Image (tube, rainbow, N blue to C red; front, top):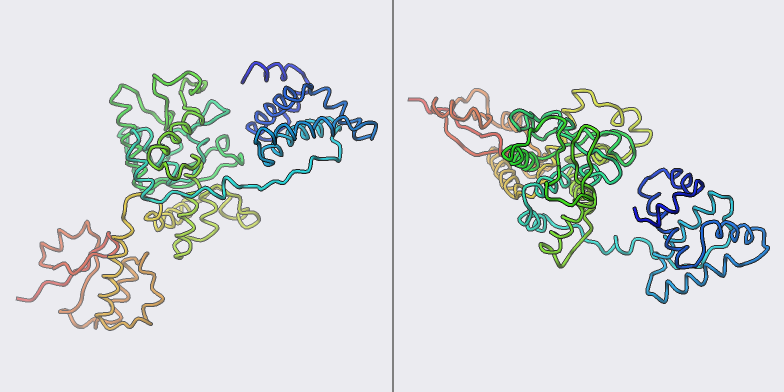
Length: 436
């Protein structure tokens, strides 16, 4: 925080107004906007209160004249009305806090969201190019952001001396530096959540491998990784203002530091489309939306994984602490969407396997109409077996096939079974041994 802002905060009233904001980030931004307006308009915050009250009681229009001149200067400097409106909001907030906000407001034509509307969410190919230019830490951070959908402030907090730690990954083995379950559970503490409420989400296998590689690299440099260690930490050569040290000595990267690293990579990897770093969350939401359109996930689950409030519906289920059985249900829902949340091109492979399964079932006598209700993208072993059994007479041992997990394949091959096809990348269809 600059010297000018510290001088403003020396005023008890301004300090109370600053603390009265619900969001610390909004408080800091509006304080800076108030200081900038006063400096350019040649006034001070106390003058604004006096002029605002005079305007409110119709004693004079000096406040209106002051703001009108400032608006003209901003427009001459090339500032859009949207920028002017945001700055004026800080002035009005200060006046409303002191019961001195007049009804008059400058006539501004605001085209809200123009920057966001023109921003394009990167494609999976774009992310591969970005990830190809990152180091181990950058890859782990980006894949966590992409697969979990958490805000950058969860990994690298701007206002607190804390961040995501390995203890927030309940399925991470800090001794072996490996995840014991994939997709892995991520618990977001209330202090790191924008809404100040805890929530849970998951990470992909690709993200798990990146975090494991980053943890192993840190361990090779002599760092003792424990459950209290930061997931994303600071390089020893990093600038002092880009780090935050917690009470227990853990060192975290700031949100500004991580965002700057991501921006630099964007400019090199995708110069034709350089979005904001926050677009990682937009990509996660977009991919989950695509998965929802395929029937792989429900809207409530999608919104819950993004940390959004579900209103009355969520109050009675997903917004509460998840039971163990609900955790597994949510994990299964997330796993069905993993192909959409990974930069590894596994979707084409799954589509090929789905087509193979469909051809096999049609070879058994099914018609297109009979298979129209089958979701081949999430076809599980039990469903496939049921479909096969309906068409294959159980008394015919020669034609009876079996669907087994890939891990069981060696045992069946030794018994003489033969492979027909792979299904969903995890099961294999086998023909029984021929009689001798």
